[in-house]
Length: 293
Length: 162
Ligand SMILES: [Fe+2]
Ligand SMILES: [Fe+2]
Image (cartoon, rainbow over all chains, first blue to last red):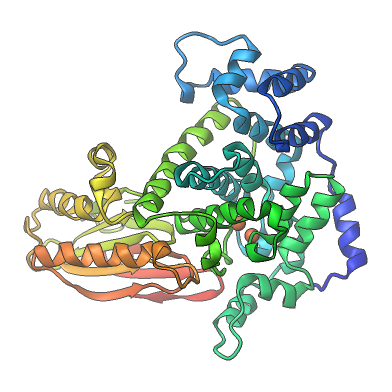
């Protein structure tokens, strides 16, 4: 049944979500700083035996095809890049939330994580292949977290899919899925996600992406290029067939991205292809190493 | 007797009654469906991009990924079960090719896919008799080999036939 949520209830829902692990949380803080050094990431991972073991398992999984067993965490992190370390840390620390079955969207368990991972890879590629002057790794992390609000409101959207689609298809006042969510339960997934971002004390740029990834023009100017990159990454993930059920493709693409990001049709096609190939590899390495998402 | 599931860039065919060919969540991808009334063989390709010139290696490894390599590959596969090599007499259906709500051409990959596929079909003297293309929603499509029936589904909508 569809249930309206008020501000108070939203706070309750957010409070019920477990906090990120201290190392995942710290990792997000460190890597959001444009001046950080990889050594800081390495030092942090070393303080967490669990995370260290996971990272070593991933690098030694068949997907990476290492000739010899890697036992040095320094080498593992240098090779994998911080985005994969962050994926592992978040997967471990909030895997339940990301792996949740989004029944309110008619999406299976694991669909949200796959969509997020594809949006993350795509956002990173958008930055890399367009030559945008922001961190590719931060674009990845932001992509990974962008839709976390869906896991919060999904239960309240239970049974709403037909009505949501009808709202979007009506001629007089066509909604996108965001507007449909807001009408049906009182909050859309970006507003809900933003509340969780605050509770988790995420860095401002990540909170901004979570809040405005469907309306990048509204984002704080300082972070707008990053928000646009994730906006495009999100759309690329959906176009590639990895949405989260009923809402897939049912959002507006803001053509204002051209003021920040230069993309030719050819580059976009290349990005879509890269996303397919990278995703396969990452998925395989996480599942080989026993990541559960 | 079973279900043949095609991922992105896969193509497959069957003439075994009782088989289903299915592909999930077409976004901007387009599914090309061939039904041969003569041999009762059915084939499908899940095409992601219009043109293989962006990555020849990928096209060799997965010809079903690009419009220009998928259609010849699917015809070749179906010729093995006795279908005409150039697709003579083949019934063609197209679906997918959705686009996000956008006013900018760059992101209309669904449209570009459909156009590229039609061009290649023309070069074989083929054309689609039915299509369900575009819009801003994702589609899952399945064909039953025995009935030659194409069924589409999308969350929030009743299933429909093509
Ligand atoms: Fe979203
Ligand atoms: Fe998304």
